Length: 457
Ligand code: ARG
Image (cartoon, rainbow, N blue to C red; front, side):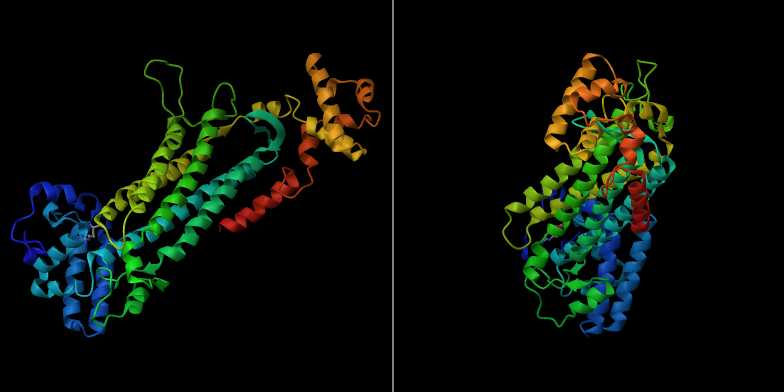
């Protein structure tokens, strides 16, 4: 087939170059956005008297037919037509004749591809946001369902202080909330119309970019035509938002892996979301969670890929930028798959409540409460910390729990200790007496569940 740029050339493009430079194998998935943009463009051209209304009607009719053909799988994409833009334009000309040649007036593939990618990312951001919201809802349901259950809280992966399991789960709801905020905030910058910037300099034809922006639901029109075709930071921002989200999913996936081990035994994963071993008959492996953790590398890699690809490019458009699509598509697909797996798996996770309760109070996890008890009796915190440390050491040496230490022995360390200390050393008191905003006390966690429920709606 003849290339649109044939006029200037005397030789045919080499087959090797055709297959090396094509992007149709992957950018075909932008077809819907490409057609949506072209329809808006044609309507504007007619409104401005650049083409007639009748011509615009033929063009939009042809484009809608092409959309149907692509949707039903009847459209044949051609590698020699390089990308989705030229495939659709060529099909249009074939369908409606010479009128189709008017569509590309006052437009270039440079502003066209920038538009398509923005429309694509707007839609993907919306989908990802609603998946995040669903996942938040599941975390919140679990937090409600297991309200009152204790869990050993960790720092350095050493048992630290008892917390409510709900409190731990709500931590993920908070992370996911910030992720959602980031995706919505980025929409401000995605929703800027590049179309009408043409190759880089604008056009001598009397186009109306504001009207096209309106038609496509853009809040703003890009104000510098060079920037509008050269910029991909909105895509990098999307990959960065995805990287942060993926980091959160990966940390949770890691906890699922860890918690389902024989060593922790805090949860049992549903059979449907685990796999067996080909040699060890007893095994039940958390592969889905492991793969969420594992795919995080791909998501980070995609961000680095695009940042690196862009960093040395002189203004304005460069063909390198065609490489933006693969990492963007891969990231959107991967993130949505990971979210969907978690959404399906999480409601089936069984929390081993007894094991959690029993470990929450072990390993001197209420030692900090003893120190704070001393503080309330007037002992300066550093001194209280030191005294408590010595009490713990002595308990370890005698292989005793804190609450097994006699009052007499306690009072050897500090005479301010009275027999109300034993209540303070219980997990229920440790958790229940937390006073601070955002802490693990049931009253505070209940408040947070209510607040978050409202927030995710
Ligand atoms: N396939 C190209 C891309 O994805 C479209 C823009 C091509 N522009 C050009 N001047 N060759 O970036």
